[in-house]
Image (cartoon, rainbow, N blue to C red):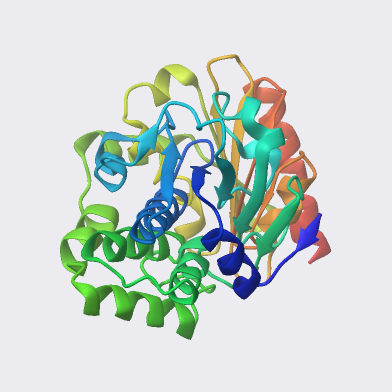
Length: 317
């Protein structure tokens, strides 16, 4: 594995004739926005570029990838992943292409190498910030479509610029998007303000069934499949950090039962605590403030182990 700089990655990308971009399982605004922006930027340079179809993409996010997706990479295409911290974060349809991924562009500090080349910057709040830098180095002039995609990416992973990972570079990227024609208000309204009735009802369910421990500094909630199925995928993904927003909670774990009976874990933490270290114990990873993992355990077993792991993390801090 070779770690490369932004300049080296930009030079390498410009030399390609065909590129297929991969996103991660349960795609969020950062992976989709980064993929869309990079794809459009490469096309602007005359490079044949596509984003591999991700069946987990929600209806509200489809517009980002309009006209950009392909069911499979072309035979001569080089593969690039964006915002994918480990091979385990690929969705099933993308896993067969793992050996072909030549470059990984990512910002997760706990990222696990799985490509020949990687551009990983844990100081970047969002993968979209790295893509913005790459497009500038490649000489791509931002279009309105690229600006919209980048703003979705950066605002998603900074929590609309509220999270501790937000930097001056985050604001610079957003400012460039606004100057290029991205209408920030409707994007922000859709991502962070508007709620569906189903989402509000699920918030109530989570609060009713949450368990608080370690003097109120820790919290977990285990959500059975039949409960999760009452709301949309987008609404569920947006609730991962709900318990962490409660006063006094320093680290929270949201556990969701997968169709095969195993468990998906999302951990959120305040500055000074490390969600990534907790998830690493279960084979996952991510950032200090937000991380995830998949556990080959039933929901109740996973709940007990995650509660113990969070308790230990709070005691060790």
